Amino acid sequence: MIIKINPSIIPYDNLLESLCRAPYHGHPQGCPDYGKKEGCPPRKPFEDIFNLNKDMYVIYTEFLVGEFAEKMRTTHPNWKEFNYPDHLKKTNNFMQSFENKLREKHPDWPEEYYAKKNNESWSSARKWYNPRRWQHTAKKNQRIEENKFLNEHPELILDKCPEASGINLTALMYELGIELKWQWPPIHDIKNKSYIISIGGHPITPELDK
Image (cartoon, rainbow, N blue to C red; front, side, top):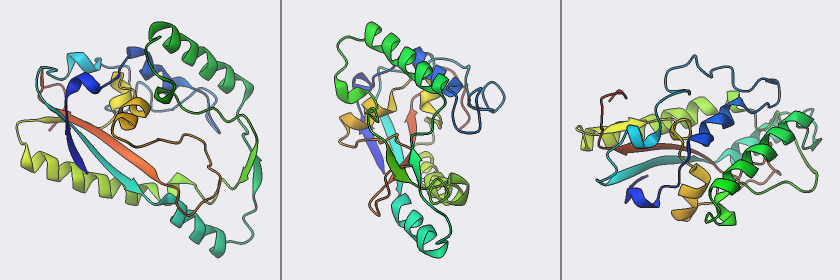
C-alpha cells in the first residue's frame, strides 16, 4: 500500500531511536545491529532527511502472521504454549523510563500514540511466531511495494527504518486508521497481522540510497 500524506501528521521525536537499545528475548543489550547495520541508528533525525514542505508517502505491507502461526501450530503439535510476558525486569524498566520521557516532552500526544501495556499474562508460543520463519516473505513483499513506489517516483527517497530517524510509527499508523500491536508473541488469533513500514519523500540531502 502506498499512501500520500501531509508531513504535518507525522509525530516524531529523536528519542524513538533509543528503542533499538531496549533489552529483549535473547538480546539483553538491545538490537545487535545498533550502530553496525546500514540504516540503523545512530543516524540523522527525520527532519534533516526529508523536505517537510512537500508531500510524503507511507509505504507499507501487511503479513498475515496469524495464518502462518496457525500452520505452525497444526504442523508442530509438540510446540507447546507458554505464559507471557517473559521480559527481563530491566526491559520493563527501560520501556517505562522511555515512555515517561516521551510523555513529559509531548503532553499533547493522545493515549493512542503509545503501545498498549500488557497488564495481564497470556498464553502463546514463541515458536509459532518466530520471525525467522516468515520475515523473509514479508520483507520480499515490502520490497515489491517499495520498488513500485520508486519506479513511480524516481526523484524521491525511501527510509526503510523510520523509527531509527525518530518517527513514532504507532502514532503515524493510528492516524491512518491502523493499530499496531506490539505484544509479542501475541495471543494466538488467525487474524493477527504484522506490518512493515517505510517512509518516502523529497530529500534534503542524498543521505539515503534510492
